[in-house]
Amino acid sequence: MQGKVVLITGGSSGIGYAIARAFAAEGATVVITGRDEGRLADAAKRLAADWIAADVSSAADCARMVATAADRHGGLHVAVNNAGVLGRPGPLADLDPAGWAALLGANLTGVFHSMKYEIAYMKEHGGGSIVNVASNIGAHRRIPGLAAYAASKAGVSVLSKAAALEYAADGIRINSVSPGATDTTMSFLPGETPAERDARLAPSMPLGRVADPDEVAAAVLWLAEARSSFVAGHDLVVDGAASA
Image (cartoon, rainbow, N blue to C red; front, top):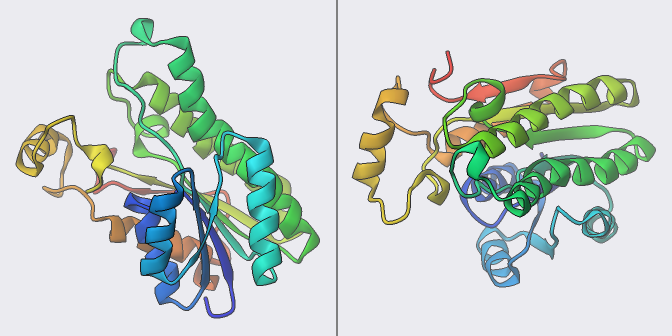
């Protein structure tokens, strides 16, 4: 990754931060984005990375973040579209339409907005690699109470495959990663301890534990680098056999 410019949405915490750390360790120039400027600045300082405040649900913000990252660092070689939210769990009929729209806006429309401008730049500058973070909840398994989240993440997986077909001839490899339960704040219910979380998730964890964020980051890094040069249109499931 020496000499490569990598843009990571939602890179200030959780899986996104682990991904940013993995690319930085490989010598990439890392640019993280998110909505919280304070959190971004702190994470970027720890990573020795750059940061750009952006809300992926805004097409204008995504156009600006891609242009700014490329202008500041002389290119854009890899993009990891990780930003997303879980939303409030609940039965489908109880979902608030505004909450549905906000979740889809962050998780699915945000990936569309990001890819739209990343692809346009890469197409004009010799290609690149895009990895979108989906979820094993959606395309691979379902959990009651998470219908909106599942729909959004299944959409990310399918959108990635469709885009991979459209832009393979332009030298742009597009893939996705579908993590299972991972040791981040998103895996906890309000007030839940790590032990309580692990007990709740135990029936769905064949390997006996949740993933470490670094394990998901390693999968993203592999999909982005030259060792996976013939892998495109693939959704790599990283869930410890939970959806097998």
